[in-house]
Length: 386
Image 1 (cartoon, helix red, strand yellow):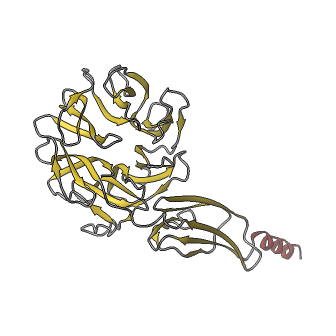
Image 2 (image 1 turned 135 degrees about the horizontal axis):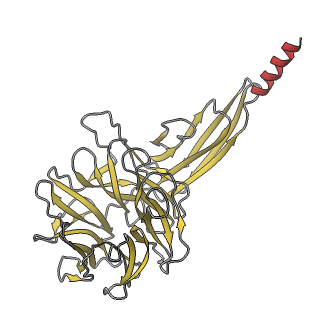
Image 3 (image 1 turned 90 degrees about the horizontal axis):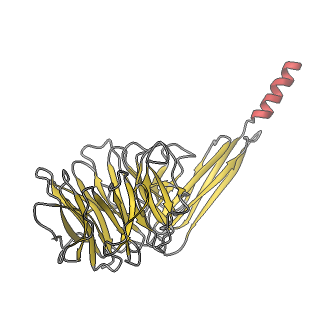
């Protein structure tokens, strides 16, 4: 009798019913959205149509689910308690995608990038229309021109020039490649320049005092000052913060925020894997960056505070890095290595899913290769609105 009572108590404690989580995505403007439900079911981070998704037999625990669609991003958590004694205990999450936030991205404007032949390395700067037309070469000559970026008004270009084995400095020139002017001159390398949103200052990376660090100078090259140990700086659209990468404050490269006066440094990522190349959305409410936490280099989007981090490129053996946002905030351009050399791609912010086992790789239909050259590497895109 005692044994029967013990078994009955155990059955009551464990329960014979199940917990079930329903995720509902409303809206979406008729386009695909990204549903990251990997917490609920391994491998369920995929592009889907808006609708209802049921996840049965969920064990006790806390689960996080995210949705990315155009300019919309949200992540919610749910606490599942012990399974019921019998039947089904329902749990639900509802995501409401605002009307108009997931309409098709406007592939307009001009994308600036650096390119080199793969067999004879000589980096030059090019532009291409966001629809893939109008490829134009801006620079020629023996020196390497790399890391270009449009000025806030789109009329000037910051870039680096020099020889990799000797020295690299920062230059500025007109939008058509005219009137190049040197802004830095130092025996150590200065690279990865980034404009402030009002065009009055430039953040850049330098080793001029021995550290790999972010420095800030006036737009004419004057008043250089060291900001923080790190690299890959990018100004927020309102100019109040600079996002950057550093491995100086922990065991791996992580993403941080800091104010332009050097105060209020905050860490946004912490996963013991490398996170690189952060970029702000046009509205300043989100970030995109690349990460090695999934094996290759995948793209992650998050809030500006680093919350709700959601992987949007699902491909284990490819490399996606140096991402930047489209002017309307609904697409990303990046330098990607899918099957061979690096090229410039454009994809919606909800990203793409790629089945790596297919050979040759089948490029997803929502992923556009803008440069599509078999004998060149194309890197460091920058996107202006016209």
